[in-house]
Length: 151
Figure 1 (cartoon, rainbow, N blue to C red):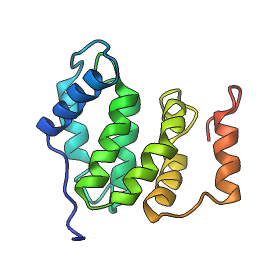
Figure 2: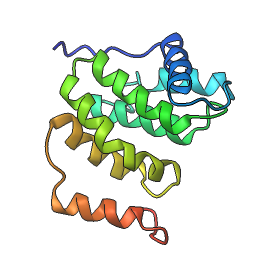
Figure 3: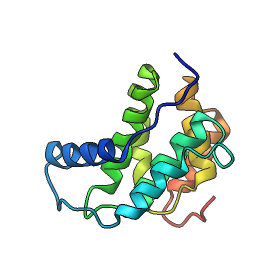
């Protein structure tokens, strides 16, 4: 696997979006903010803000999940884009783990219960192939509680 990070293009994001909506049972098809999509794609390439692969993956997933770029399916698209980004960069096993682990967590990111600091800790474990330690499990559980303060 090369250390050179391969990024998703705007066209790839739109293709993933269309296929995700089509395969997952529909919903409203449409882009709400093309500029926001382009901004997310450009911003993750800035190594000053996101110096490593996990921080870039985190920003990609977090922003597409909570950014309301599309009419419908933002959480589904965020999950699928995360998998595509992992696969494009040769993290095949992490992509499998990502889908399984993040499916339950993505809702809580969208609801504002899991912030970027906690989600990057989660994604680091996923990409590294390590189990969630006890502290991370507790932090996730607390964040998922409806009346829990945002971490």
